[in-house]
Amino acid sequence: MRSNAEGPKGTTRRRAGLVKWGMAHAQGQDDDDRSDAPSTGLVLARYGRSCLIETADGARSEAKLRKRARAAVCGDRVVLEATNDGAVVADVLPRRNEFPRADRQGRKQVIAANLDRVVVVIAPQPEPTRDLVNRYLVACHAVGVDAAVCLNKTDRISDDQQNDFEELAHVLSKLGYPFIRTCAKQEDGIEALETLVREGVHILVGQSGVGKSSLVDRLLPDRELVTSALSKTTGKGRHTTTRTTLYDLPGGGRIMDSPGVWEYGIWKMTPHEIAEGFPEFGEAAQHCRFANCTHCVEPGCGVRAAAEEGRIAMSRFESFQRIVRSA
Image 1 (cartoon, helix red, strand yellow):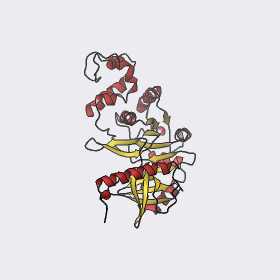
Image 2 (cartoon, helix red, strand yellow; image 1 turned 30 degrees about the horizontal axis):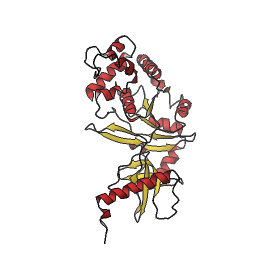
Image 3 (cartoon, one colour; image 1 turned 120 degrees about the horizontal axis):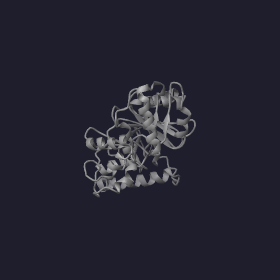
Image 4 (cartoon, helix red, strand yellow; image 1 turned 180 degrees about the vertical axis):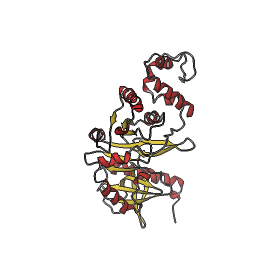
């Protein structure tokens, strides 16, 4: 007779036990050698209800997502269980962080987890939409992940664009964001990018057509062999840019290539939450007449005054206001 421990409360206790076991196992603290014991793995890619998983011994295989399991994303550490039909993802271990974007309803949609840095890739063609970079930076601040910007296709910068990109590089570098210039076609700046991503886990994000996959190709010369091996494992074809995929880099570190977007949408935030993504506002905000100033329409705004006096880049202040109005 089945115990009622398999009901909702029993399932919750069982899941909590799996997560506790998985964390200990991932840290090398588990000494259970039974063949039927759960194991842990790293999600290299997610497609539908399946994941490509890498286990501690480096083996890669496909695993199905259990119906009631928390949705796994690229970069997740997960608990695996063996079944007659193959491995299943039983649960997702706690994340250090997660990187989301907004769905059509303005809700968070997580696309990657456990990151050390987000690298926003832009290019002169297609030219970045007006607030694209700042939207990404706001999101990074909100979830506690470092950010950098990579200007790719530098050989295609027109005379009309040169000043705008130089101003962007100056403003962001002054704020402490790494800003690198690359040309994947000519391999310019690839060494600087290699240095940037040499440690930890990075994700390349940005518009379609800015050359994210070309940059990964330069960082990972045998990528074609790697993607071919992944395709054989999953049977899903080689179009890896249709999903976020995690790769090991020969020089160290790991990098995710993500599908391109037209415009990056941030989830619903208050003006104060958005302002956190503009850290240079902090000191000036202390001089606002009203403690709850949104830096949009209130009189006596210290941030507006700082922008008008040149202590804050007017381009960033105006971008902040546009993002608030669209949130």
